[in-house]
Image 1 (cartoon, helix red, strand yellow):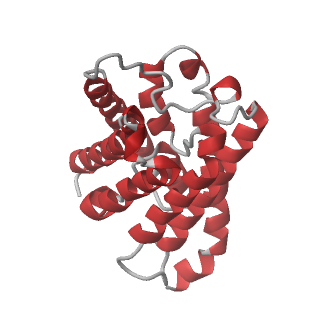
Image 2 (cartoon, rainbow, N blue to C red):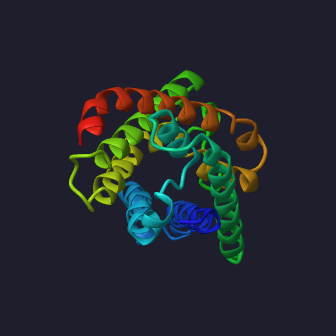
Length: 234
């Protein structure tokens, strides 16, 4: 598949993840009676990955996340030369999605953006968790997200079903970590909302690039070792 189409798939996949995932909290928060709640937001993020994995995963590989791209490179599953173009497409998709979400949400009278589904630590953490707790959470959650992705797409795994464990894996990650960081595990998803939330959310954005990338690289290296023999003989 040619690179422009692959980048287009990454743009739209990351757009959908950011728009629908963050939109589930930004828009539903204006109507508490809808009762989408904690579980609903977690499912929304999982469903965005699940739906786009089947819609365009066969075009680009379905990364939709700079940490996933870097982690797959570390795991020997992705070419180094393609990392930067993928990351740029993903970030542009997330920012465009956040812009559209902001445009829609701001159409409601007296709407206040607040955190705009951005991620944070300390006073910006939903549960007021400190820097170390948030850093460790993002590293660990991203590690297991990549571990699930690589394992589900390795030789010997059920063919054609990878999107299901990946989507449910992201749902579970949100159920665990929303109270801590509002769940990133995705630098692009963090960047889009932070640019519109502004202030300290932008100042804290570094953590939501650094921690997911570290977790992803560790997962890629571990999975590369764990699946090496099967990949070579498969």
